[in-house]
Length: 149
Length: 168
Image 1 (cartoon, one colour):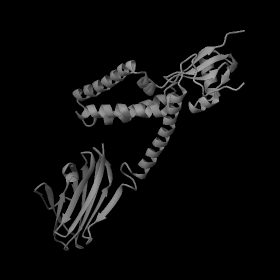
Image 2 (image 1 turned 120 degrees about the vertical axis):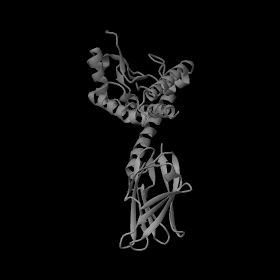
Image 3 (image 1 turned 90 degrees about the vertical axis):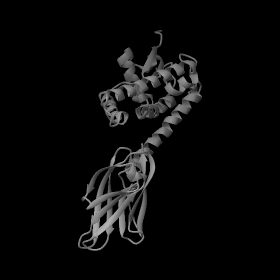
Image 4 (image 1 turned 180 degrees about the horizontal axis):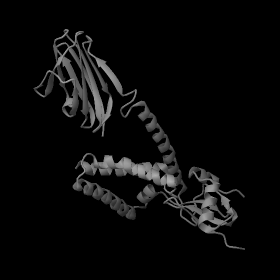
């Protein structure tokens, strides 16, 4: 019984923490982010398993996490509100070659971040070439180029 | 021409700026919350810090207990109990309460001359030194969750009660 509560509690706590951290934290996995994720995993595992290192306990914990994960994605299918609440929504940060600065500041994105991503993923060299830059729900930036005149 | 950033876009994605603002506000408040948690942890609100280390003495001063006000389920804490009695004699220390009952006693230093159960309490006979003082160092692994009380008593007049809050 206890391991179910442990797993569910940790799932909710991590969900809230990652929601607070915002989308920036998930996108573009740098070496540092990767190490950070490992440390988070390391810190979590003790609290998830407790003193019980049995096979059964591990399976129970993993099953609980799966049940929650699948359950939430099923619930998100039927409720747009829940989906928006848990995943957020896509946001336009560049429109017709213009940076939308207020939105960028709230999303903790700089012009350099956007241009860097544009260069590396789309080969764009100037903001005027961008029709739309969108922060997707998973934190990545996607670009739609302007038509060449 | 100024760009109206507040307006929800329909193209290329469906936006809801009111909801987006709420999400940003949540992130902002959450950030303050996280900083607050770190500051509280440094102060010892979650155990092991200046706010957590406490000492309590009985009215007549015969009995003194150093304990942690906050602890966590499964963590090991030290409890230091000092008793005054007759020089080079024995004192009987009675430990009771859910905090002691629900904990696992990992070590007990120095070994009491005798330890007995008394009802649900633990009765320990300690040897006093030439000044008439006896000290007992316990390390307890706390179980249970929430505020748990413990009571230490020597004789019929000297007693202290203390409470440790145990986080899950």
